[in-house]
Amino acid sequence: MAPRMMDVGINLTDPMFRGVYRGTRHHADDLAQVLRRTRNAGVDRLVVTAGNLKMCRQALDLAKDDDGMYVTIGCHPRNAAEFDKFRGGPDAYVKAQKAFLVNPANKKKIVAIGECGLDYDRLFFCPKETQLKHFHRHFELAEMTGLPMFFHDRNTGGDFARIITENRGRFKDGIVHSFTGTQDELKIYIDLGLYISLNGCSLKTEDNLNAAAKVPLNRLLLETDGPWCEIRPTHASFKHLKMTKEQQDMYKPRAMNKERFVFGNMVRGRNESCTIGQVLLVLSDLYGMDPDELAEICYQNSLRVFFPQDLTEFEEK
Image (tube, rainbow, N blue to C red; front, side, top):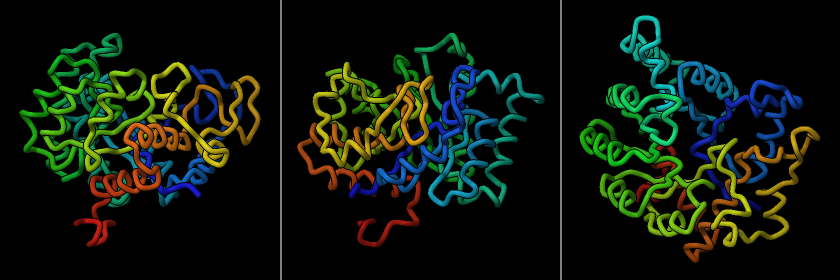
């Protein structure tokens, strides 16, 4: 039986989960199958990340009838130009974000502000200046709601850390999602009281593993960032991935190429929430811990950030 887990970062609005890849349909919509595998792997809550207004609408539509699905609201750094392009400009864009947040129907579903931050690895999506110009608007939303912030940080040369430090008093909790930074960056984020969320991309190299091993257990969260960031045989983490037959059935079900899609199988190269158990097993081997114990620690951390009302008195201590 799988331990309970929470995927705190999954891009379920991506068309891949509907069978569409780069604008071309390759197979039928199999989202229901994806969610069935997710539950079978012990994942009872999902946080669906929304990187712009359109994705927020889509995520809320997905989550409305699923008691274990929740969403974020924000503007991914690669989409930051949308602030200026929006009719009425940046202020109107923020007003539209606030409209989602104040809608009573969304109150129990929106659990974080984000995905927001900076990404200097993919400046072809959005120039650095535009990202820097609009990142700060998310702190306004966090102040208004008291919700945690879901951060994106890629190769930002200290800019991300500087902005977070300058605005640390404006939000209660923050998560550096898909962390791939250095040990020095990790120390800065931990000293700022942030949580660190790890996935397959966080565990690619030996340097990644060395940094991951330094994450304090009380600051560790798990995610997949699907359909991206799967663990691959070429990754440094792969040698730490040791699965029983039962675990393999749950965390690494049979996968086929999208061109040969068969219902009930995963699609090769499309990461899903069920694989979060692979991240757990790598980290438990890295830390020398029982996987069930580590899973419960991460689950309690996730509750503390996103669902503090669900913590028991014992767990709060």
